[in-house]
Image (tube, rainbow, N blue to C red; front, side, top):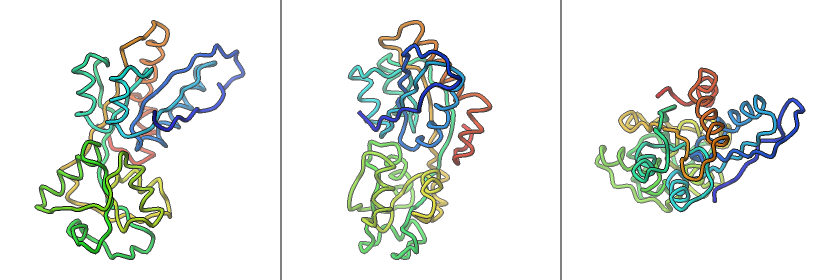
Length: 243
């Protein structure tokens, strides 16, 4: 299972009934969904929202294998479509968009300024694996530019790519603009104009297998929060675009 993060005790001092809502979400949603989970808990005494954050493809595979998820939020529509085909989720709704950006260590020691620079054999590049949404988008951008990128490693989530850059294990990585923003001074961002043709759309849905009525209702309420004006404002505050 991915990184599991509980979001604290219920607000308001009400009696806890032990209800846990499990939300599987793409790793790039960490900051925004931690905020949304806190908002949801504040409005639902006794409900604990637990976030499982990892690469969308890994999370989808876990749902297909029967993992006890109540909500799934993917970083692309193709991954969500796999669960739709297996009748494991309700009708998905698009809730955000995200765009790629190049992340480099502070000071940009390799001098990366363009997409073409990433094809230089002297640049240690890290990418998401092709089956991961950020990897699929990176491949589309590279293919459109006629570039053959040869990463030194391929990671299973965008946060793993960012981690390699932060740790100084790579000269550059292709991540989302939201990840660069969240990293603060740990990395610098290099704009990637070519990414305008590879924007990722994020869908969300309730997971349908094994639901009881009360949990299904709570899951739908969480989806409704993400789609609400408050949800959109929270996502925009973390750098996500509207769908």
